[in-house]
Image (cartoon, rainbow, N blue to C red):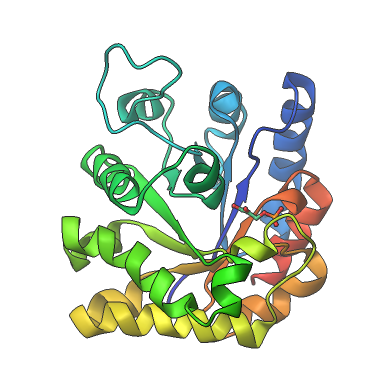
Length: 250
Ligand code: 13P
């Protein structure tokens, strides 16, 4: 039985003040509403706030990206050891916004996955197709390529140390959610790809859905057999909405 995971990807949002009140709001509400695992990924500079406010609770926190380097002259980057210094459990790798705006390749994302894993962080590997790719019928091909880059570098067993997030690019921040059936189809495909290499890893690995998930559609999505939770952008920025999704994940 896979325990659902609801993770908030706060992206580059919030102020010190709003982040504090969001953390407090989630902390105050979450215990009463969900059995799912809950995590938040603030922008790097607010990770210490998450640690300070969430330590001793069941809520985990993590980063949105990491460097493949351990230290040195890499302006603007964050190392795995630094995420560990602030007790992160998770780190997102290969988000489509990183792939698009920072030209992150499948190979680089696979290296980030490996770097996170080697440091004891649980990588949340994002995969997903653009609208153009979906319309030209290559969704499975794209997702397989993104996933296989990690499997080729690290071996299938490595996936057991992380989480996969299927995030159709056309559904991110657009208000257009994949239907539960559309999402389930790709989730099942991802699980079958993993199962070709290891039935055990396929059975255990959590595959989250991301892309305009809200309290109103979360239950139906997470109710699908291969959807094990959500990676939430916009709706994770308001405690009430995020808690609504956490409730739906029960
Ligand atoms: P939205 O929930 O805002 O569509 O973002 C999803 C996402 O990109 C999570 O990583």
